[in-house]
Length: 221
Image 1 (cartoon, helix red, strand yellow):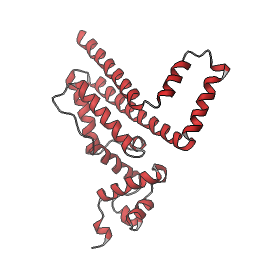
Image 2 (cartoon, rainbow, N blue to C red):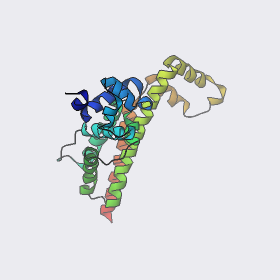
Image 3 (cartoon, rainbow, N blue to C red):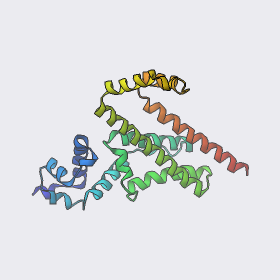
């Protein structure tokens, strides 16, 4: 049996993840995936029409790996779990956040994830418009945070921790910054290192707390 016949979409997706790990999304191509699998590029095109189609497959794979929360949990817990697990997946997969941003939510795995979040808000008593807006808000927050974290990681790798530390140290000592109220907090934050997880959870809690107030106002009408 030829290698072309042995190829499956699943195998191509896994090979694409390896290419992402080595080269990043900008250099991901059908040719590089074919080289990683030791096949000719046309064999890849048999399963995926182009790079965009491949990215759609990667987004679907990522969504399929996110375990849905227990149906008996509160809407707050469901929203929190979906957001955290989605964020973790985007951080685990190289350029995962960018993959999600560059693709359209039309596959069943991603739609099921969205539907689970939609049902959590809808069943809690939010209106349809509020429910859809909350789903979009959480999706934008999770993807945006993961994208920013990935960007900061890349900057740290390219510039180097010593250079970045030097830039901050110089900034803290400059005369024109001494009256800034934010400076002590920035010093403390810089000394404690990146607090990606804590910052992400804080923002998520703020969103959920705001949703709770919105729901309470709905019930009071």
